[in-house]
Length: 289
Image (cartoon, rainbow, N blue to C red):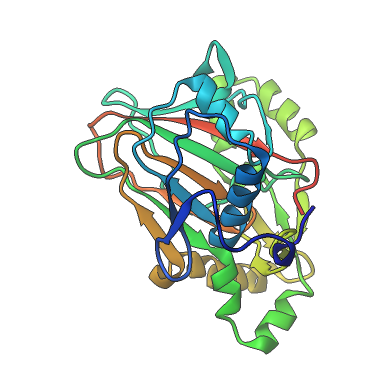
């Protein structure tokens, strides 16, 4: 994989407008309905690595076009069994809230860090947007790491954390779905806890990332429970620092792509009972880090 210094840094195929000083950019000048040549795709991958989340406005995409565009960044996975999907396009999850089923991922997290190889990123495309509310926020865990004192950074680099889906609410969901506990037992066998370094290195930028999140990181190996909880609480709070964040107000035709390796995100659940629907595609890679 190319390192950041081998990539262009300036772009000939589109214009990049920084969204905040620390994270995010709006990409101008591309019609995502059209096939993108390899040079344009390489520039987009570079922009994603540098800015961590990139936004495209006023796009009018079919599901086929959304999938084709998303492949510019990596592989495309079929959806997880927990989420509904488009029948004709099993790669597309339907992320929807209605007055009957109000829901939003109103917690800071990176996706599926409880896997040995978490996703590279996500592509999320607006379908139905409430008149007000329903924003999404992203936090740069690169900026969070960079904000720490050097001695603290060095200490964190010696630590390993345990990640598991069982602390995220899925345990209760599976028990409600199957009171016998068989589905929970099967999920535990298929997806045991995994370990990740507390500090990871981005494979493209070479920058260091604070790699823990409050939704899936249960504890730090080698520390007492009280010491682990205290340290993780301190680290989790860094995602909530406004200077490390980008907040997107969705509009019809908006598409966001984010780097799941270096960011966390939060879906604001302030729009109920309004209707909100987005199409989500998970971007995969054989080797995340």
